Every structure is written in structure tokens, then in C-alpha cells.
Image (cartoon, rainbow, N blue to C red; front, side, top):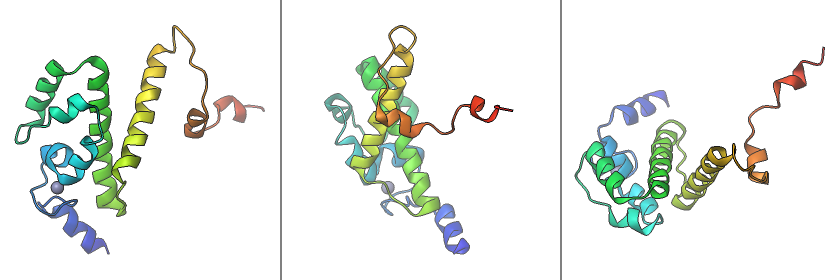
Length: 143
Ligand SMILES: [Zn+2]
């Protein structure tokens, strides 16, 4: 089992499509598995999908084209795509595009709520409660 994992990690091929070298640009942008996800994103991000650019060039181009909210969407989806690739390599699970996007939009929502939280308090939602990692420390400090 370990050997198999090692082989996948060392393989220069993309673990998701097995067709191209796994560069960062490929995993996040050019891979058919990534294209499936981007196809469901904001129209402007879809239109901006130009292949064979470095990730840096791409981000610069996007920064010029997209507004702040679209840029946030882009960054969160990139982050989720990278996590999905790691989960696939290390845990053998592949998150479907719609699940990935749901999770991305939830993170985006939380990001926006936390940014605006100081001025106007967002109403707590059930989603947020589920994602709390641990109860408050005071809970353990009763003695
Ligand atoms: Zn690929």
C-alpha cells in the first residue's frame, strides 16, 4: 500500500487525469478535473480561462479583470482545488465539482462575514455552528 502511494507521489503525471505533468498550473487550472469546477464558477472567471500561462501571470491577469468579490471566489476555489488534489493523492477520495464549490462558497461566505463582522453582526447560521472545531476554552476551566 505504501509503495503504491509513493509511486503516485513520485509520478510526474497528474494524478487526476493521468494525461499531463502535474505542475501547479495544471492541477489548479488546466486539468480537466479543474475545468469541471471552473465551468461552474462566475462567468467572468470562466471566460478568463486561458491555458499555458504561469500561475503568477494568470493571477496578475485575473487581478486586472476581476472585481474584489470575483477575486476572492477565484482564490478560495484555487485553494479548494489544491486541497482536493492532496486528498486524492493521500486519502484516495475525490470531491465532486459541486461539493467542492459548495464548500468553497461556504468558506467565501464565512470570509465575508468575518470581514464585515466588526461593523454589522452577521446572524449566526447553522452552517457556522457545525464548523466550530472545539468548545470555548472556558468550558474546561471550571476548576
Ligand atoms: Zn490533470
